[in-house]
Image 1: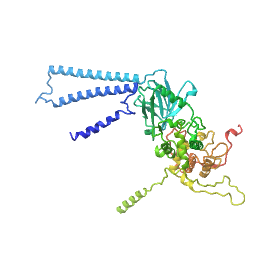
Image 2: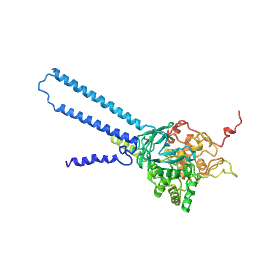
Image 3: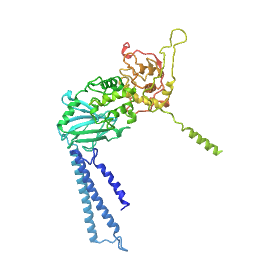
Image 4: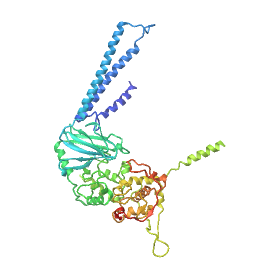
Length: 334
Length: 186
């Protein structure tokens, strides 16, 4: 027991990964629920099959053959029993395979079910971040954000997936299965969260150097909270009132930041990189790489390649005393 | 005799251990190089125009690392927004042999740093100086005006033509040309 103990503990450790904000087994939506259910039924059925097979194997190995038996001798009684046993085994195998296939089909039906109405989002995978556009029938209510999706609880949300460079894959394990984002076409998947919470997602198709740092967050919240968030995201950035942030804004506008980034309500209109209009309201920067704090923003601007090597943001020319106002300005873009 | 051979072979192998010294992440707040380049060979008085070169150009345009860094910076700083993949769009083509403001690397550095009339903005204070040199080196490689071993091979993205390394060596013709839109109809 003393020798097995540590191994048992080690074997149980991975089980700790079965829950948390990014786990397919910790389902918080109907699609993920169907997947998790299917997973456990498969595990149970296949474990039973394995155990039965092993028992049969052990019995066969332990059984002694009668000494000097004639291998060609047949006994009608044994023959009949063997025929029946093998027929039952074949029938059971067929039943298992057919029912697992049926189960899989039923889960797929839930997974790719399409309910009309509700929100629709255009999510564009890019190296290495997610551009999210909230669609609306009214053009002035369409807005773009990045790497953080807010959804109302209990409503289906349609995700339209596109890619601008290579193949990515949208995967929020707690809510749904994977769906690829492929250049030149649009894939659709619906997600729904049954409980409020923050669910982490991850690009699930190797897409280059920083594939591992291509995360996104799905924040499921009540309808009122979601509407409040949406109204705030639709609005333009509030102009800075204090001197330091004013200076930070001037630095942003005079540096190459504006060549790629957009801050609605200012002259910055680049659309190549994440929209920064409300960057301070997002939980992370760099697609889930760092928490949004003033220090992290400053570190990111000064040396993006130290934080996320290979990221498509160049090191820019910045005087040391320009870093603080710039980071303060960006952090304040709530 | 055999010992000598083995020893000398080992020495040859060891000689390969010298690694190119690369400056992966240089200080973004660097002083800029001071180049004085003449665009025309004419000057008042005898002796030709005064020129001043730091000699840095050779280090950049003959170095594969710098050129491939320049290739990435070319899109990161949105050069392709106007010059496309070198074939030109609203900005002039960069892969042809005509150079309106001179085709030496120092000329290109000056063009990026100072800007030029009719639309080329100045990037002084926006792109760190060493990155300007890297971009200029890459632009030189577009028309294959750099050594073949240093020119970039194919990149990740879909490319409209052969990689820089596979292009025939180019030549530099200083001076502008009449754009097709301004030419007399034939």
